[in-house]
Amino acid sequence: HSPLPFFSMLRKLLRYLQPYRRNVILNIICNVFMALFTIVSIPAIIPFLQILFDIEAPVIQKPDLYWSAVSIIEYSKYWFSNLMHTESKEIALAYICIFIVLLFLLKNVFRYLSLFFMAPVRNGIVRDVRQQLFNKMMALPLSYFSEEKKGDLMSRITTDVMEIEWSILNVLEAFFREPLIMFGCLGLMIYLSPALTMFVFVLIIFTAIIIGGIGKTLKKKSSTVQEKLGSLVSIVEEGLSGLRIIKGFNAEKYQEEKFQKENNDYKRTLTHLLWRRDLSSPLTEFLGIAVVSILLWYGSRQVFSGELGAESFFAFLMAFYYVIDPAKSFSKAYYNFQKGAAAVDRVDHILNAEETIKEKKNALSIKKFNHSIEYRDVNFFYRKDEKKILNNINLIIPKGKIIALVGASGAGKSTLADLLPRFYDVSSGEVIIDGRNIKELKIKDLRHLMGIVSQEAILFNDTIYNNIVFGLKNISKEQVIEATKIANAHDFILNTENGYETNIGDRGNKLSGGQRQRITIARAVLKNPPILILDEATSALDSESEKLVQQSLTQLMKNRTSIVIAHRLSTIQHADEIIVMQDGTIIERGRHEILLGQKGAYQKLVELQTF
Ligand code: ADP
Image 1 (cartoon, rainbow, N blue to C red):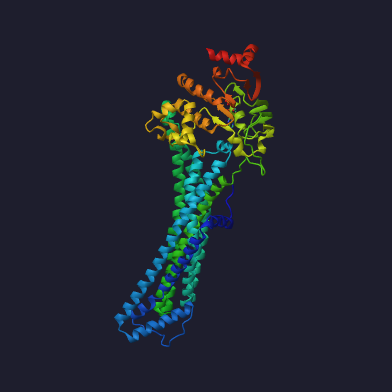
Image 2 (image 1 turned 180 degrees about the vertical axis):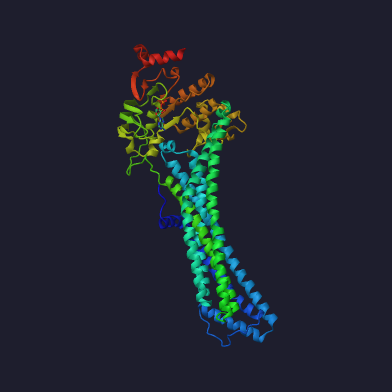
């Protein structure tokens, strides 16, 4: 995806500011005042030097005071020369010193205030973007995440968002504060000496061109740096979640090397980035001093020839300093803007990702499941250019029945089940509930009809109670206990440290596999859905806990319609129909006894398991 052009990027950054208009405006106002006091403090030095060097002030006539920079300077000149005439030198100097201190006090009060108003904006933006990203991640279809690296997504939600914050802040300062100071000082400089001002332009144009060149490559580089960080976080994420296996297979070295490679890559790219970025400020300074030297030489000549007062020249130099400073900030802002732009690109890549599983505009509501589920001529592939995973599937599941899917792993059983809650959409054909294509239905309603228990018990780092209630509303403790009793979980829960309030650790790793599974079953019981999808729910368990889990599953399946994916065929002998799948096709179907009698693929599977 190509980087956005400057202005659309700027618009995008400013869009984040929308909700914080009030604070941004306050910030700008404070910045304006800060700029004002910065500019005013410069000519204040002139009378000081005049007294120090014993130069007679030229303004004797009281000028009219009106609201323009020139008038104010003229007036202050008059005021100070008047002061020198009427008071002693020391007192005049003291006045000026107090005046300067006051100016800088005001300047810095406003500087602080501008930052004060900005703090909630910065953090607010970070919060907003993160929330948007997280919401989007929740909304995106599962297929999106099989294409993207988890760690990369994680680094986008952390570092890229911070990158955006930085660049917005810098852009704000660069656009509202620095120009004010810059143009104010420029005006002052032109007033003091137009000829000298010419040199300043040379510097600005010079640096702008050179810095612009570096900035361009910086954005590209910064993009790669963030990508590398993403890969790095990915490996950490994988490493942590697979630690048990890594240790078991003595694969630490392998993982370490993998990490080391990425880590080195990251270091190298980042170093290149820093080399380039760090070039900017030495370069600016050097260019700056070069022009300052010319300025000193040229300006001093003007002073010698009497075209320019020494004190004015001094003020000019100060003003010039205040022009360089914002120019530096400008270049810094430009760099950060480029980096921020790369981050916005990466964040937008997620925010603009297509939600392929879409709900129709006027989707129908479905509150009850009445007669049947049907797969009609269903074909499916995960990616267009890859092989078909499901091939012309036709299947009717009447209400109240249990359908078992069996077959070698990779046959497409899970995929078939995933189509029902629309985790994926069919590539062709239809999935129909009670005579309606599921694409016509509200996704929330559709999923509300289903309870899913999968092979890997999906639990969250939270209390047992919250893991069971999990998003359901208006649930009483009694209902939860009732559900856990059905799921054979109540007793072991009471035996944990804090009972229902026990925190079960990351992914529930403080519990045994069977316990975890029974909690997910309790969760399904509590949800009380008419349709159940059991995806090899017992296959990961030892036979002791399998028995317990199987008992609770049988309880759960009572009076419901179930699709059961089973490895252990013993568990599905009583299914109403057994579907035998191979390479995405249904090759046999029927009841257990009948299929056994056919002496086909099913019988072979059963035989394999009895030995
Ligand atoms: P089963 O549940 O019968 O073991 P699956 O439905 O999980 O089979 O997988 C069927 C086929 O689909 C397999 O060949 C698998 O490699 C492929 N597959 C599963 N998930 C994905 C995915 N997210 N992206 C691409 N291919 C996938």
